[in-house]
Image 1 (tube, chains in turn blue, green):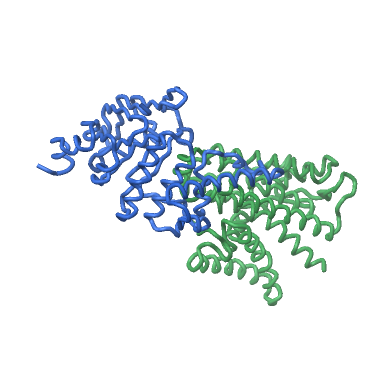
Image 2 (cartoon, chains in turn purple, yellow):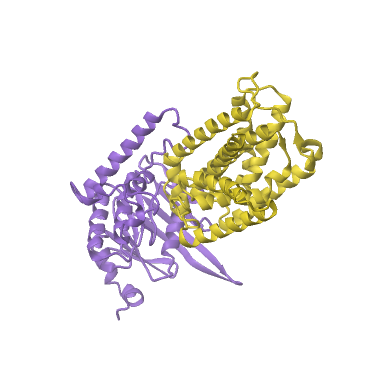
Length: 262
Length: 291
């Protein structure tokens, strides 16, 4: 197991009434697997991701992250920048004013040289660190898109010069610049054309095979069927059903309330 | 000749001020309207140090920059997590507080009477800089070093993070970086270099009073930044050049001083409106203002 969610409850206040968006949610996310979270709009899927990665601290219950060294981290008081979790946000691509290479370097977890003027008198060392990051970025692009892929020639292009689909694809690959063992992917294929959906599918599988555990939110059931090892169905603030993609899709409750099949 | 040298000295001081403003405003998206407060704090600290101790320039500059930088922590800790309009209001409050202190704490600042007779900078402890040519050389060297330092910052991993914070602070925090910490650095550095500009100004003019460090001056610095453009080095430098040279051009047109002063304000306003409409990144800037 890489992540354990225990009795997660989150209450939103609406005027004088309160509303439990998550109500005693329990889920174990398996290590080295792709776990998909499905559920209707407004079910609380992104809210759950926000809880896990430290953006929504007002919950009750526990989020435990199991690290590779055997340590278990209670995520309650962990701010997002210390969460050690890779995250692809919903509908977000590359940083628009940074080049592709800068975008990839930004996602590296080597923060050397980021304190202002820290390498002013050691420019050579800073250059070496930057060169290593560049080599790592090129290696990743080659690994995922093959030798002589077009992105190697586009490293100096600004983030907003890429199409949305390419930005999602490249953001996903750039996450690998860090050594996080758990990734949260919020609707990786939403708004992306079928060609890139296939690429995203291949990349996610490769990342899983490299030992990264993936927890993703997705509405594209074909994508879920093709990639997920396990699917959890969220409804009424709880995980209602967990199983293989086939089991979940054939579950009567999921059919009725989510897929709209009688 | 002295007239030209005076313009260049003023330009050098404004290059430092506008580049300093570019770091929080242009890169980190913190619309700080208290840059003149830091400029003033630097000038008053400088006046005090120069009048009481016989220290070489490098030491005075270091002390003034650190003290002014530390004063920025008052704004940082109170408001760096505030976004957009809320941060603007917090920085406005700081600007007003600093001006009120400079104006009313007469025992220390001499209030509206100002401080006169500020001695010149001593380069190595003994040789005092007095002539306009000395200040031309000193301010040109200092502003050149400031340009190089800010260019280094912009191209360094720190500049990369500030640019990313400008685009998406939330995502930056998911990448293992604390945006508040980096914004604090940006604000500290900005204040420190504004303080350095204050030192150059106080020792060159040898007289300071609170009216040089008002909200109007902060807006003037931002105007220069927005006209020149944000996010790179040449934008702020061009902006400083524009606001320093324009009054001189108007002077040669031969308009009476009363009309020229008003016309200058109208031209700044008009240029800003035109730039916001047709070129939101400023004349030579890299990033769009407000994006």
